[in-house]
Structures are given as structure tokens and as C-alpha cells.
Amino acid sequence: MENPFKKLWQPHQEVPKEIKERVKNDIALYNLFGELADLVTNNYGEAAKSLLKNQQSKNNKNGKTK
Image (cartoon, rainbow, N blue to C red):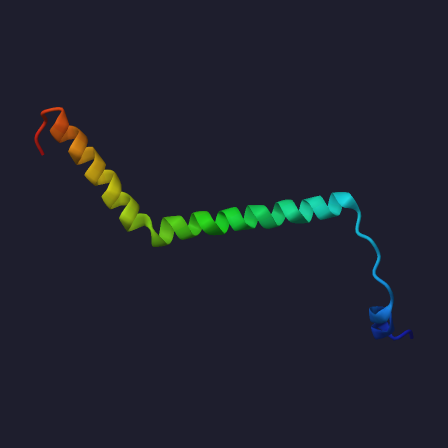
């Protein structure tokens, strides 16, 4: 049986361009999902406050009351 660890020291082979692009796209997609999850979970309260504050100021400018 051949020792698989001997292959670790051999020169690396070039990866095909299609695989490189797919890996880059997958990483970018996972980054996007992570940032969206962070936005929704961590900043949800602040975003909701800001939205409500903007809605109230618009209503006050149009002459509507709370």
C-alpha cells in the first residue's frame, strides 16, 4: 500500500478556471448571506426604529396625527 502523505510534498497542480470561478462565486454568496443575516439579527431593532421614525415624520408633515 502506498503512503498518501508522500503526495503532499509533490508540486501542486493548477486548478481549472471553471472550478476557481465557482469557488469564488460560492464564497461571495456565503459572504452575502452572512452579511444579510447579520443585518437582520443584529441591526433589526435599529432599522425598525429608523423606519418608524421616518413614517411618523412623514405623517406629521402631511397633517396627520398619530
